[in-house]
Amino acid sequence: MSLEKVVQCPICTGASFQPFLTCKDYTTTGELFPVEQCIACGMVLTNPRPTQETAGTYYQSTNYISHTEKASGIIDYIYLIFRKLTLRWKLRLIKPYLQENLLLDVGCGTGHFLKHCKQAGVAIYGVEPSPEARIIATRHNLNVVEKLEKLPDIKFNVITLWHVLEHIYDLKGTIQELKNRLAENGIIFIAVPNWQSFDSAHYQALWAGYDVPRHVWHFSKTTMALLLKNAGLKIKDIIPMKLDAYYVSLLSEKYAVNGNLSLSHTINAIMLGYHSNRKGRREMNYSSLIYLVHK
Image 1 (spheres, one colour):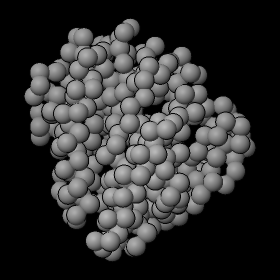
Image 2 (cartoon, helix red, strand yellow; image 1 turned 45 degrees about the horizontal axis):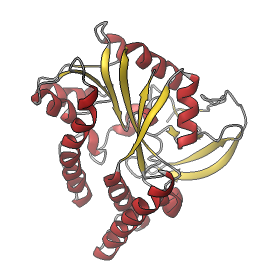
Image 3 (cartoon, rainbow, N blue to C red; image 1 turned 45 degrees about the vertical axis):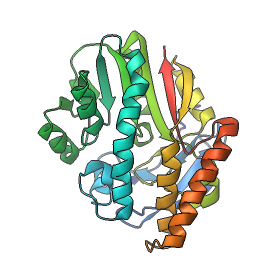
């Protein structure tokens, strides 16, 4: 598989990186990928990584549950349950900002969030590069295009990226395009894993939040703030995604035991998720964070 080396940090343009971790692709190939850290600003990235042209291969697996509608194991069923639980919660989060009742969901996957919003009377648009996921989304009669450039020339009150930004190769260009698409008083919701969480520190290279090589960037609060500041954007608020600590810990525990997740390991993961959320309160360092961003 073709790999490329990132030679310049997308946040500070630094060109010096140090080893951080070596993580395994547990979803598709079993390959090992180095994870490095920018010496200047602390940005963490998968480096080297697949080229953008070949990256799609690493999503072609029934194990990549967010692009399918089928569950092949207990953790997949848990994911689908969690997804249902969070749909209403996400809609409640964005509703106060839907002044013109217009939503753009970037990286919408199979479109479950869009479908839920549409049923609530929201005018929805979606962007999803995966052809397989788009096919499923169109079965729900959702307005989903391949990339941002194919959207109509309109401004959105709310733009959401639910665990998407960590996948996007062109960080600067995408953030700028989203800024251009945002209405003057609009809000962008950016949800990403947080490598400075307790569960990340516990599982280290086994932490499912790294998800190499699909995740090419690994954010902390500091690097996210720098990225947005460079784009002329501001963080209005940060909200935890508390269910993620449990799901990510279950996946990480599964990786630790080579897929043989026993009852005791399941209990360990649930307890770890609980402790991660409890410790996350101190400095808002939960397993995943949602950044509310405005101009």
